[in-house]
Image (cartoon, rainbow, N blue to C red; front, side, top):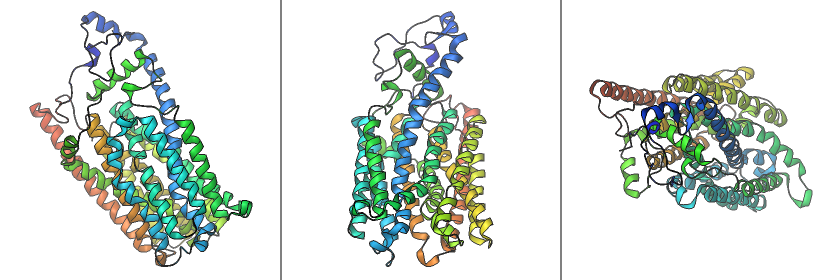
Amino acid sequence: MASTTNPLATGFQSGDDLNGKISPVSVSNSDVERTVCGIPVRNQATFERRVMRRIDLRVLPLLGILYSLALIDRSNLGVARIAGMGEDLELSIGSRYSVVSCVYFIPYILLELPSNMLLRTFGTRNLLSFCVIAWGAVQLAMAFVPNWQYLALCRVLLGAFEAGFFPALVFIITTWYRRHEVQKRLAGFYLISLLAGGFSAILAYSFSHLAGKAGLPGWSWIFVIEGAVTILIGCVAWAFLPGFPDNNTFLNSEETRFILERIEEDRGDSLPDTVTLWKAFEYLSDWKIWIYGLMFLCATIPAYAIGFFITVILSGMGWNLEFALLLSAPPYVFAALSVFVFAWLSDHFRSRAIFLTAQTILTLVGFAITGFVERPGWRYFGLFLGNAGSAGCVPGILAYSSNNIVSHSKRAVTTAIIISFGGLGGIIATTIFRQQDFPRYIPGISVTISCQALLLVLLGVLTLNFRYHNKTKRNTLQPAMGGRIDFLYTL
């Protein structure tokens, strides 16, 4: 059961071990009224803004840049294919390209939970920087593969090293903020990767014009440059990667106590509990985790479909390669703006379900326009809507789930399971958009639209269940979440 101690009525002795229990210190009511964590109440708002700004600048840009590298390195296969790799490695034979795209997700799904459970054991800086450098090395090796089988092996290794990365980032970010601050932060970190991903195809294609340099084909230069940059940034990031609030190294003791107190007041899990196999199995028996996972799967299918196939879809509308690459960027710019606006509204109104509903409908409408309208201009407009809606659902679902979880151990397990369902979404996306369905991809678009309808049903079931439990708690003062009677589910 999570602690229900009010952190505003507790203090910390100097030299307390922040990895241990919060040690209460007796203070008078007048002291509590005058100060919070040793800070005069009249100065608390200014102090809070300064500390939160410092956390935002340390945590979000760096994690956003690193995740951008992961997203670019996993999705640059399409550009490399049209830059000559498809012909050199004979990827157009049978389902070779789909296999190469799909095998990435097998280790990605299987290793996410173990990685998140071991995050504290190895340390955030050590594990995350190792992952970045390792997948950068694999990316670099892909420049020299002699056939499609070795390419598939590299994709498997890429999935293994990227597996624990995104769940770890989400886990870390959600431990730093109150429940109704977290979606803006998840969106802020995610939109960096959206913008980078939107222009990565253009950048990768420009790298391919180095064809012939050092005796390498153009597509090899895409992997050489992007792999080398990833390794370099991974080495530098080791010194700056943030940890968890209780063991961070960039805040002083006063600022750390303040952050821990505001988290304790919000949900009662400011300090970590140990992740064990017994706890993991207990958490996995909670049916709500699997509903979140299925929702995330439905949201990631259109996101991956656009990421992998947008240039192919655009070329199928009649544009040549250069125009298809240029036109692939604007939908991501629009999506980044949409993601942040919806996240701000969701945090401001402290509501998740209604805005997730709106973004899911946006995705459904967008893919319907792209799939079933004849005019290319309207079909292109549909990509704007579909990309914006699906991109917004990713941080939205993660925020919805993290808002309704108490304890670090359950957060680690739940985050990994939900994001592993995103890997399943990637597998589905790479297999339903088949080469024989080019240029309209009607079967793939139909499956994507059906999954958005399923997402709406699952969201309704989950939200009605939360509403029922909140009503029961108000009427009977029974614990609503994590055993806390002062908690209500976020709807």
